Image (cartoon, rainbow, N blue to C red; front, side, top):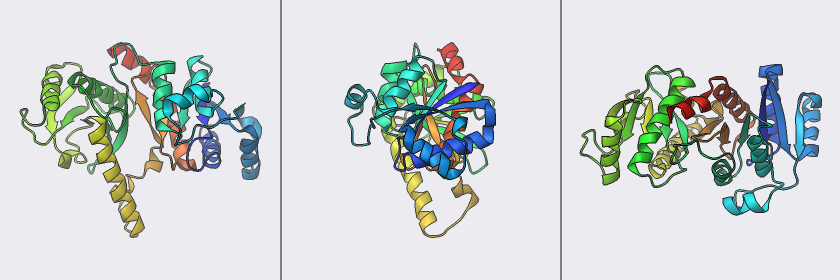
Length: 312
């Protein structure tokens, strides 16, 4: 049985939404998953009892500390050893759980991933991605979206492989098309990093590189994987989020733009580390937590980590 650790103290609405999300996942997946709630056990039991769920459907690791969004990531991991995030990574490192999810401090999740379970051999920089809904239907990925603000050309080249493997295995896209985000389609376009990255990606035989793509190509299906540095990716991600929330605030509904709702996907994996780690949005609700758990299950089921190790 797959064992998934859930940081119930991470996120703006902790622990309620995390616990309710675990209850939804239990209802959907039943005995296929062993769900371990990491955080304040008393609060978790209170929420479970209020909801009418059965407390024995879950296991618990009680913690007494919380890493907040205001804490310094590296210092907090070291100082707050009994925090839900630090304990979660300790369990993952010791292989007492198969995956760990949290909507808490993103920096702390990245630090924990890099220094606890560590990057896969050959990976220069682990990355985080975001979903790219296509107007033609289906999903692609954008990476990096914030973990690496500055990237060398060889790092961008590796992002292409990580994104390609993720799309192929998790989204079931045959021979995913990988594009490099640039200010023009010609190979000579862009800054020196983009030009050098293009040359490396053009020479690779590990994935289907289609060349440069522009901002207007992101949602057309021209590419399944859009590669960029974390600075650019984060700007794109926040712009997309703002469009979704503006439309929602104005009462505008559209099936395609509704696909930008983060709740439908839950969170994003940290690609390139030795175990499944899923990061959720700080405002994650129960549905988002349930889908984070589903993402962790999907990644384990397709053996994504082993496939990445084999490719590197």
